[in-house]
Image (cartoon, rainbow, N blue to C red):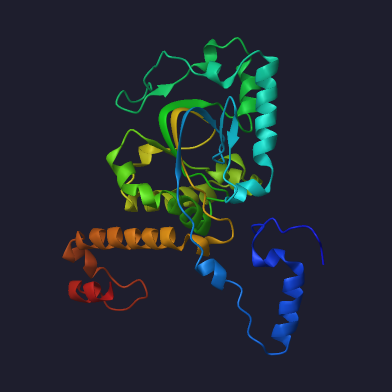
Length: 302
C-alpha cells in the first residue's frame, strides 16, 4: 500500500489513514459493520466570504494581489500546486519588468464596445511598458488575454464541465449569496470553464461536446435567475472581488447545508416555471409513444 496521501481526499479524510483502512477491511470481511462518516455528518463548517480589492484572478479562482495569493485549502484546486506555480511565475515576471499588480490597473475606464450598458470592462494593459504577450503567458493562463471588470463574484471550481462538479462545487458556493447576486446586477460571476482553459484535445476540438456543456450550465444559471451576460471566465483583473468559501473537496457531505439550500432553490424555481407553462403546451405527446398527457395529469405528475 502506498504511503503518500491521496489527492482525491482531504488530509483529514478517513481514507488517508491507511492503517485504519486495512483494519476496517479485515473487520468487514468478518461480517462486522463499520461507520466512517458519522463524525463528518455532525461537522460544523462556518461559511465566510472574502472581499478583496484590486486582485488578479486565475481561471481556477485563485486570487492574487501584491502581497501574495489566496486559495482556500478546502477546494480540490489546492491538491495540484497550481496556485504556487502560477503565482511564482507571474510575480517573477513582474519583478523582472519592474512592475507590480498595482500597475496593471488604470484609472481610465472604457465601456465595453459592444454594449454601453454592460458593466465596465477595462483594458489598461496596452499602455504598460511590457510585452503583453509575455504578460498573458506568465500572469494569465495558456496565454489567454487578461480582461478587467469592476466587481467579480468567484465560484470557479475544477471540472465544472461536469454536471456534478458544477452543481456541488460551483453553484453550492454561491447559494448563500443568491439574493445578494440577484439584487446587484453589476457584479460579474466568474466560473472556471474547464473545457476552455484546461480541457483535453477532445474537449477543445468537439463543438458538440462544448455546446452541451454550455447548455447545461446556462440552464442552471437561468433557473437560478442569473443573467448569462454576467458569466465570465479566464484570467481577470477585478477592482472588487467577492470570494466565498470553497466546497470541501471529495467531502461534500460536510457542506450539507449549502447543498440542501441549492436543491430547495432549484426545485422552487423549477416549480415556478412549470406553473407558468400554458395548459395547451402540457398536452404534448408522450415521448415514450404513449397517449398525450392532460394538464391535470401533468400537474399530478409534477
